[in-house]
Image (cartoon, rainbow, N blue to C red; front, side, top):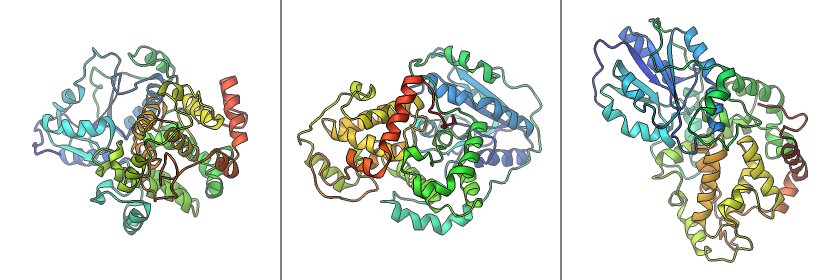
Length: 457
């Protein structure tokens, strides 16, 4: 991403793990090891958690820190160096990538189309002084394989399937020929599971957003969840995925977002279990459609990115009477008249995730109960960015804009929505076990624990 020459006399090749925070199935890491072998150098992996990212909180910090001990262990076993930096306060140093790059032959990082990595990858290469490579290890078919924004799943699906065989294969792990033998740089923080609560408490972040009661971060938790899904839920995924009470979804999105597990290894594991067309459609076609949107839309999180027909119909009906209009504070506190919507919001507040099908309903109702489309979008993004473990992600922004007509088609015209798809409480009751879901959320609110039979991930 720049024209800088490799540094002679360098100590290592640096891999800056911004999004793919794992030692396994990571194209970015293997790319770094290959270059290090060519240069007869060791690899140093740099991972950080800062107090300054938007909506930094106990929830996200706890999830991220939970992955550090296992990442460090697995890298050490491969002879790869590892440095973890926790920027606790805004007054702490904020130039660590540049310090580490000053002794590196080149820098490798993750290609990612939104949030902080996208900003870093736009600004850092010109200042780094050595070659700066961004590698896509977030998708199965690299997102830049498609050079324009796709209209919908039906336009990208044949393009993905045409080349999928080339990419749906395990990442070859490259042996590091020159092991890291020295101590880590002085900024390194050794993280243990027992120390995480105190470390989080010491950071200058929002302590009101508590850790998830349902999800534990890190590679080991991700692997355990994948095993459980494959063994118990994959076979019934197609029939039961839209009903939260069935608990048939993978629930892997938090670990996929933070890079603790790779979509490629998930797809390969599902494929090895036998036919899984519905799951692979979601994991590959739908997820990579979201990355395509995030990469090629001028702004992945603005209404300007939805189709013209959707924008026109929403503005045509922007002045329609709303039976209910709620403020951000009322939405955030789950204070609407709708028990199902409130339960969805409580699930987000407590666990950091809403079941995918119910999240569609959650978003549609925010449109219905907001004064205008822009206000509705701002509420959705605020709540997802602040509470969702799988938020701040191409999938998040695409799923939000789907509520406004992105990747969808016109439907029958009605108030507020115009020709954008509408979802109703009665429709949800007909299609899913709403009462069971309401009981589960009520139990979680009353006890502060998951319902009997529902495992913590």
